[in-house]
Image 1 (cartoon, rainbow, N blue to C red):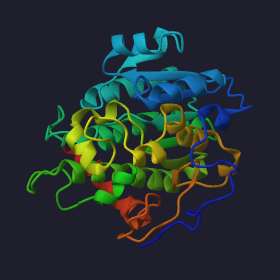
Image 2 (image 1 turned 90 degrees about the vertical axis):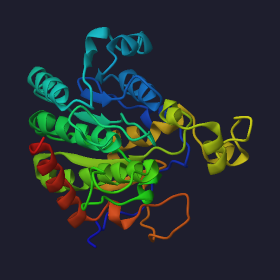
Image 3 (image 1 turned 90 degrees about the horizontal axis):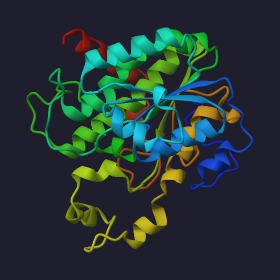
Image 4 (image 1 turned 30 degrees about the vertical axis):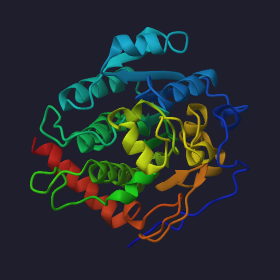
Length: 324
């Protein structure tokens, strides 16, 4: 295992649940161009709002443009919303190439969109749904955006990972669930491990070109991400009671949407991270590395930040895309 020496907490001045406004206080992002996938749902809306309030020009790709325009009315203009479906790679290529051509400099990209613990499904190109949407779609978008990110000479890219990365490393023997039995949580865990590893490898490849990358666990938050879960399953996890109300554990640990977007915003803007990259973050800080059998509610498994696994994940994803 090869883990970055930077993967350890630093002094940030924030606790575990700062509000977006605290993280963005006194920041001026005027003249900055930002892209936020999934920016019209859950913590994505609050991410877009906070960046816009700080002066950035924020763009949101969406597979449901009408819904995005309605949700983001009063936050960003409709012309800053475009069509893209992460489950259809040609649409990702079209959006990415057009956006990069129109914006030769991109300062911030936050890959926030995702699906969680859904039944077995396949993308337009036959990829397992969670791997395809959460990881491969963003990987393809990144390739189109790279020239514009390099031109910013100080760009940051944020991928949304999750504590669920601990449910599975990337399974190189069958990433796409073509032979093994499908398990929705293992599939989600694999996709979130892959998202973390993409940030590790991107940072290694591009830090000399001015791009730093970070993966983020936003925390437990009740959002539409849980739409595929019934209350019985959430109660089994201890998130809700039998009547669907947040449990005492959830009341203590879960975050609001404005708190849930704070770590993404911190990773995208914090001066404290100017000479850091390729690390997994949570609670507005860099995470501790924890053993693979840890039961702690915080910390990152080694398999999600190992540079050799990250390099292989990038190569395997590249090969997977090339073969579609």
